[in-house]
Image (tube, rainbow, N blue to C red; front, side, top):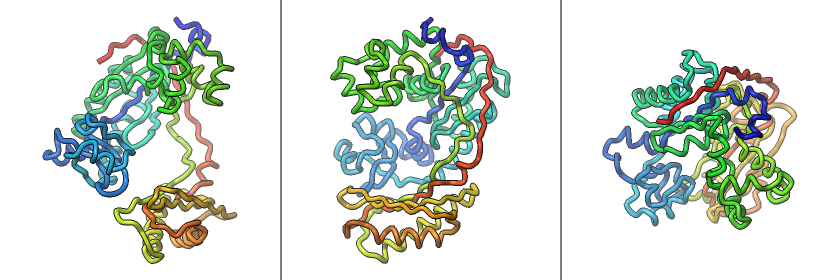
Length: 372
């Protein structure tokens, strides 16, 4: 076994972490709800403005990806079908999926509507095999929603996250402790979670193509080359990642924003949108008893230039009217009078940061699994 793993707290080797990731979630929901879209290249988002929120696997074959400008997506895939997003529907299904997770463990850390980490080291059903739990969860998701999910299983969040992408879509992969070293040594660096395109290209220029190349570098060398991320790369290539599954993540900000199909040109239009955003922000905050002291206005112009400005109050903001009036004050501070394509309001310095959250990691031996 990897000597670095042998030197770790043995409790980390006993953890059983599952990363569940829905397959092309938004697009799959649309194809499920509208059978006429099944097997077709679709993108969730606005056809004439904005960006692709999600792309079906049929669209991905043409190079269409999430966060891609809609115009670029259409150029890559001329027969692409655009579908307007239905976030309430996605949230509804996401809640059903999380209910399935909680049948097995309370140690669930949602990352977004369509993915989450689960610590099943000790679980409610007393199942020893994390691989079996992942299979059951994926099967239940399919039975109850008609959608497919992929899963990764290993001893920590980093490895589980990497593993969940290997047999996508509708598959799973387990990385057993005995296989961690060999797996990571042969893993292309661009597949390491946390290594983006720019960092990967820099690594390529340094002759770092796989984990075994990265492993040859000292922590001092990697820190010099990649700053504080260097220590992260040094550890994860050795299978070391101590971050626990956090079932009660402390929310640090709440944001609402809108990209408009037609640019906003006048003050009246802006005020209408700010009022709507303020009401939506208040609605979201009220549901969770959240208050905050810092309000930020975000403006994206037609030319994609971005402006943000914040204001912090002594007391907590408490009403939609308060957000709206403060948002208008921040709007007056804008540097440009140009057409606006996006407006957003976010609240930070939340009262959630005052609440102490405790998560307990339960430990039993990690057993051998088989992939499916």
